[in-house]
Image (cartoon, rainbow, N blue to C red; front, side):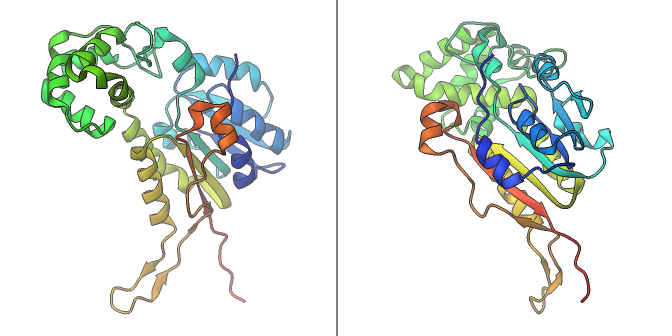
Length: 298
């Protein structure tokens, strides 16, 4: 199964996993990044991996079979429940894995007609078809607007609600009826919106950004690769807030130093060469946060 990890060189350089360190890969997927992390930390290190997709995890278990690797089937929104020890590296790649796109039966792409599923974890939760059947046009319109960043959503929301869509082809037909020749440009945003809603990706990312930084050991690094503006904005705001010291409202003097620092002032993006070689990487943005070492009195 071919899978090229996005921004792998940049992730290794900026997160710098070292021998004996503890690494947490929150989106282990097919194990591309995790395999590189494992090679860097060696037998004395510890790799913990999570993935919501049981099929991905089965593949990763074969690839990452080692005594110092522990993999969990679950969403990173439940990170706090794992009671993990401090981590030297925490990583999350928020993009779809190759099987999600390449396996038409998963329902993630409009390029093939397939059941409208879109769940990362096919063992739990409602499918995209079930979600659309449950929602009214106003709720569907809000999803398309908020998660797909579409402006004109009401007519499509009404069409989707009335169609009782069961397949990706049904969604494509609704979009073509509403947008005509503009449908091919709109469909990626429509499918993005439905996928985000089905998997509660925004809620999961919010939970990750609230929990993961506190798991970093002093000097630990946390990196997140995002693929659309909604995710990147959340990551940017959260990391900036953590890296900002508390100041007095009266004097502006620092009353509490920041416990974290930004390793990336601007997001790292793929090189032109990588974007050409792996088109799925084109929209990727990588941001890294570091937990400061404790200050000592001289």
